[in-house]
Structure formats: structure tokens, C-alpha cells
Amino acid sequence: MFEDTASVEAFLESLLAAQSGLGLQPASRSYRSNFTENYRALFPPDTQNYSADILQASQEQYKEIWVNGEKFEIDAGTLHSAQALQGSWATVCIYLEHWRTEAALAFAPKPAFSELRQALVRLDTEWADFEMKYINELIKIECHAKNHLVRAIEAEQFLRAFEERPWRKKKAVWCPEYIRRIRLFLASLAKLNQAANPNCNGRCDLSADVLLNAMKITRRCKTAGRTSGAEEQQAVARALFLYVTKPLGAMRNYLTQVKQVMEQVNPHLCQNEGLVERLVELEEAWQGLGAHYIQSTELLKEFSDVVCAIRHAQKIAPSLSSMCESCDVNAFLVIPRLLWLRGLAEPSAQVSIFSNLLPHRFLGPDAARTGKSGLQEDLGASPKVVRQDKWGSDSALSTFVQGFEHVCSTLMSDNSSAASKVQEMLIQRAVTGSEDKKLYEALEPGNRGQAEAAVEAFMNELETWSIELQRHNPKDWNQFIAMILKGLSEGVGEACIDKVRTASSVRLIEL
Image (tube, rainbow, N blue to C red; front, top):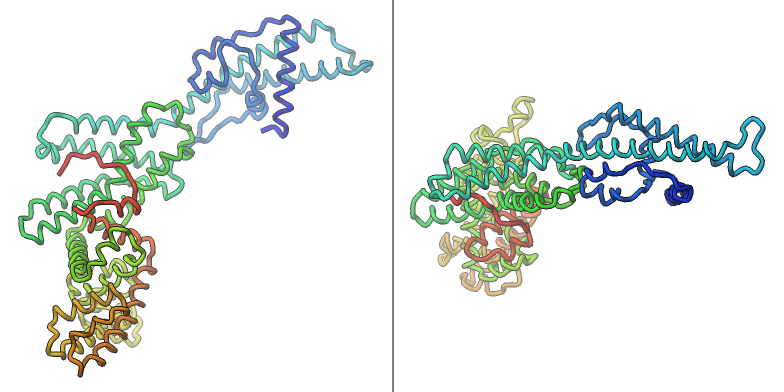
């Protein structure tokens, strides 16, 4: 851009005034009627005006323009017109400089008045010629640059047209044509994401398999039976499905709306905030933990178990329900404790979840049998002391497991404490904290002091492991806790989830 654009604009206005004062006939600007709406606003068809941007473009004479990662070459005819305009511009500037000087130099006599008139006419003609070619080039480039968005809009309409057919929904879900249209739509979104989403990775592999696999597993849960466990898993699967696919619904709504205002879309797609915001949400959902869980029967089963365990904890400690519903900060401290308590009580029910959240603590299936780390075995080093449990965990986690077993045995040594009561006591302590003075009143006085000391020591250790669960991979943990809240909200309301993720409803044929 010019260093002093205002001065350039003022000079261009004075040129127009001079042409008008001299009674010069301007070149036709009728070509502007064919410009797009945005450019017609800048270059009215019935007005002769000069823009500093046009003058600058004729000076720079770029041979190529990059938009959305694509190179567009400027036509040779447009570059030739730019050179012609610059020639006319230089001539007018020289003539005006000579007319400004009171006494013309001997080697550069003052030009005749007729020559100045001709120079101004030629300038206007060359200006109009370059403006027409250059703006038409930009319109063509902008149209091509929006193609990724246009194709996504068309693919969404193509999918929507199928969904709105008056068919029975159950018959339509696995129709090959429906699946084909889903794949076409996701493929168009992947290309759009690659071109317009610099805030994430701009991935081009937003596979339709994420959606299709999620639909299959959710449907499988729905047809699994009417047992309480199956119904619970179905509810959690649907909640998780909605959590993953809501950004897709928001994207579809955006495409429907933006279709009406394509003139307002910036051809540099990454500069459209609404579009980028929805693509970021979509990519994060497609590459995130939720998509991973909803595509795995085993992880979905374990996740459902976690949600059931927390709901059970809400019955034991009712204050937990209000914490979760209001997104109280204490809920984010309590949930990792409850996750550990469930995993420690039923290791086989949570092995996949814990090994995903804390992979560095798990040595693999071979380590669970041999008590050795594969790396140490290869190096010939002394193996870690690893408890041979179902987790195959490292020595630190194994010690923590032993601490849990110790506190359980200490509490169960009290004749009044069955295994279920022990678990309820630990859950109550994890939720209410050390301020609950009535927690240990049910224990026999002779064992109360020893049991309380054992529980408090374990809870202090539990807090350390809860913090590690949250901090090892904060991004995954934040997604996991949002998924938990989504699972808990099924049938309860979604006020809390709206704080975690706000998105439009999903438009897909119901499963």
C-alpha cells in the first residue's frame, strides 16, 4: 500500500476535477455492470472514479496471486494493460510537473495544452481498460477460491435432499445411497478444512468412517436388549454420539445459512471467523477422544461403566449431582477420584480407559504376566518390581494398587464393614472431603482410629494420582471430563454441557 494513501486519493480526485473542468469525455464504465455486488459498490457503473488500489496494482504487476494455498497466474493481457497504464500515468505526471514550473527548462519545454488534454484522455482510457481486466481477474480468482465452500454447500444439500425424502427412517439409515452421500459430504468438508482452517492442523482426513462407525455401534447398543445394563449403555452411547457429532450439525447449519450470503464471504476462507470456528470444532471432535471412544465397543463399554459408577456415587453422596449439573469446580476435582476408585475396585472394567489416559503407566500385556518392561528386558537391565495384576502397571501404580487393597482390608477387618460398605465409605470421603466428621461413626470404636488413619493416608495418595490423571495430557482429560458430563446429562438436561460445548443440533436420520 502507498505510504500516504490519503495524498494519493486526493491527487486522483484532482485529476478527475481537471478532466471535468476541461470538458473531457470519460471512457465508458459500463463494464462495471458485470462486476459482482461487492465490486459494484466500490466501482459504481455510472460514475467515473479512480481508486488508489487500482493504481497500486498497476505498479506492482504481480504475475501470480496465492489464495487458500493455491497459486493463480495473472493473464498476460492484464499485465500488458498494467504497463500501458503506468506509461500513461508517467506521462501525465511529467506534463503536470512541467506545467507547475514557472519557467520551462530549455531541454524540456512546457508541453502544449492540447498534449496535456490528450495525455489525460489516454490515462482515463488506459485506466478503464486495466480496471476492467484486473477486477474481472480478481472476480474469477475469488470465485475459484470459494469453490471448496461451494462444493461443501452442494454436498450438504445433496445429503439433506435424501434425508428429507418421505421414507421410513429405519429403512433409510443403511441405504447405500445414504452412505454414499455422507461420504461425499465429509470428503468436501475435509477439503474445505484443509483450505480454510489454519487454527488447527487443517487436516484433510476427516473420514466419514468416524460417523458411520459411531452410527453402527450406537445402533448395536440400541438393539442389544432391554436389560438395565444395555439400556444404560445405549443412553451413554447416544450421549457420546451427540457429543461427537454436534459440531457436524453446527457446520451443516452454517452451510445452509452462508449459501444465502456468498457475496459476503471472504475469498481468503481462513478470514471468515464463523467458518473457521466451526471447522476447528469439527476437527477437534473428529480427531478427539470422543470419536475414538464411540468407534470402539470396548472403550464404549468401559466409558458406560464409568458413567454408571458416577451415577451410583451421586446416590451415595447427593451433593455430587448438583456439582455436576451446575459445573461446580469441585466436580472437576471429585470425578478423577471416583474414576480411580472404580478402576481400583474393578481393574478389568477400566483397563482400556486408564491405559489410554495414562499410557506411560502401563507396560503392555506381556508385562502383566512377566512383571518386566519390554524395554528393560531388551537392555538386559533389572526389571521393575511390577505387581502381576490385570493392568500390567509400573511399580509406582502397582504400589498405589496395593495401598488401595490395604485400606480395604483394614476397613473390612471391622465386622460391621462389608465390601460394598467399604466402597461406599471411600466414595463418600472422595466427594465430601475430610470435613465429614460422621463418616467413621459407623465403625467400631476399637478400630476407628486405625481405619480413619488408613483412609486419610490413602486419600492423600489418591489426590496425587488424580492430579496426574488430569495433567498428563490436559487436552485428552478435558475432552474426557466433558464426555462424562455429557453422559451424566442424558435425561437430566444439558445446561452444564452448554458450558462445555455450544453447538447446533445434529441433522442426521435418527438411529
